Amino acid sequence: MVRSMTLSATATAHSASQDAANASLHAAIADELRRVRNRVETLAEALVGDAYFVEHYLEHLQGFDMIVQSTDETAAILDRLAAGTDVHAAIAPVRLGCVHERLHAAVRKG
Image (cartoon, rainbow, N blue to C red; front, side, top):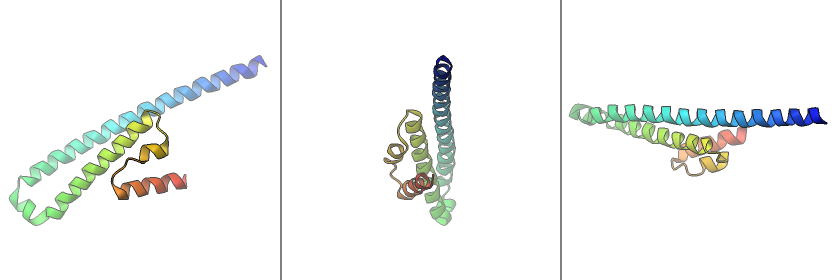
């Protein structure tokens, strides 16, 4: 009986440690995504300053905006997961329809 209680306590401690590690990883990935977003924004701002590029590649500039928005949404999801939010609740606030649908589809598969 004592041995099973000790094993249970060890398993619980390991689970809590793993949860903390997952939360830290989620938060770190969210920070990395924000760094990427900042670099993409800086690049887009430089390109917007080039009249030739804007005139000839406007649709590509809109792609930068989509990358920035998607990166923001993904980082926010990871922040919510790091805080212990349920997967479905973490995805629910996503505003980009295409991202929202892909993430819900992934959760349904898993």
